Image (cartoon, rainbow, N blue to C red):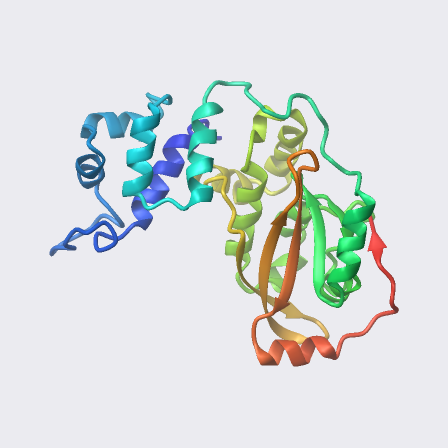
Length: 280
């Protein structure tokens, strides 16, 4: 598995920025996706050799001015800039800002109350491991029929990567799997022994579908987007999702799913369930 998350992130961002976005002409016969190393080095004011060392993991401690220059050239968002600095901080093996604390599974009463207020939207509370801690009735209506909640200790990462029903439920399964691996990698990843144990399990149960993604997917999931779901009762759905991060002490996040189009809104109205909030 990759131990060069900094290099992976820099390379993936370099390949996603177009020459036009960087103020450069595309030019003919351009084979490299995004920006060339020579272009990034020139714009950031570093040598090509140094950029290669960073991407290959032979130098993992760039200075703050270099990080700022690279962040500007690569057009990083504020969240991506924070992630970049965290990657440098965690370059030393065994570093984790969480210490040996286990995965957060206690749900505060006010978080339960917040989920209640989100009804009838589909919303779920997850921890860093992807454990399903609590959810709304809307989320049960949405994911119960696809089997996500069959396990009393449901885990969204295990479901997506290990349950064959997930491939039917998510037409864009590859993208969904990428996002789940990115979320699991976010933070200390294998430096956290609890996350490492889950990663070891997925290495066996999911094989290359997991390990291959660990090698190529940076640990920064999308906070918002659109998810396609093939619902057994409601048919094809398009759901816009938003991620609400709780405090660092909670180390939990709420995902809220809303209809992304009129057809989905109508389809969701057809689903019904007894009125009650379910908590894991």
